[in-house]
Image (cartoon, rainbow, N blue to C red; front, side):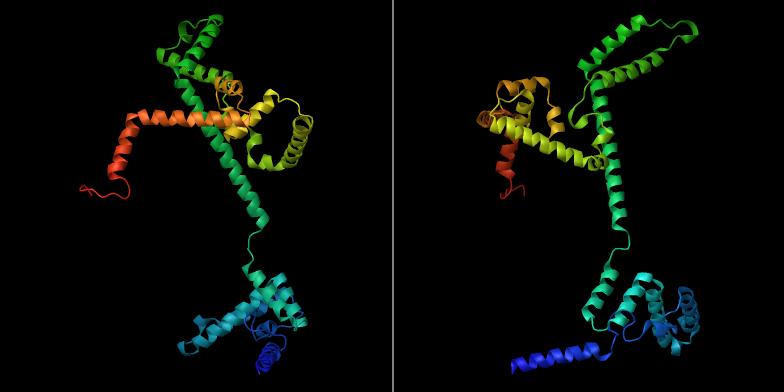
Length: 334
């Protein structure tokens, strides 16, 4: 009994789908033929379609009808506009003609129609290009902002400022002094001195890490363009590492030791480059590239940090506050 009901249901569904022949409800012009709606032949040109649309639009425009006929005119105007929208677009018209020629492919027609309706109107490639360009510009601008911040900071640090002044004074001995009209005021001398200090720091100081001077090769666009080279270089490096240190069991050089230390510390290259030379030498002396040594050193550092925090008056006050007023506690002050 159930199987008979299912078969009947399927039969009725197929009858509904095929009852209107090649026209499907809910897509294109529905049960109406778009060409018939505009009153043109299927072979009509774009010019003929546009001419027919303008004539019908003027005829059925709601503003040109009285209140009694306005609703009917609105419906007809929508049908005309829908038909014109489909037939004026080459790709939509091709899909519509395909439906007329292949009426049995119901699901394919629905798919083609709604795929075009929900598809993005802007070229995805253009969106990707613009997005990458914007990211690259922001990346480069941010790099220069960080570099400027670092330079301004080092200009105020007495250690680097005094060193720069020494170098400026050494160069000043070689330069002839300004006299007469060329003589500068104290304000001008001070401004020039500040500019010279900044220039010396920029030229002589090797700022590394996240605050390093930005390079054009660091932006996303360039990184994507050279990515094949970068990937090939990585595989070559990895193959060399396997051969030398895994298969041949050779001893690590300083470069390999620093790489393993950086990996153990969980730092990126720019972040690791920002560490002071004395600290790097300390890491090498402690042999932190060896996993066991690193774990022991890390445990010692964490223990030392706990002791420092325990002796810190601010941390003690914070613990007392959290004990008396922390989450989950109610006091009379509440």
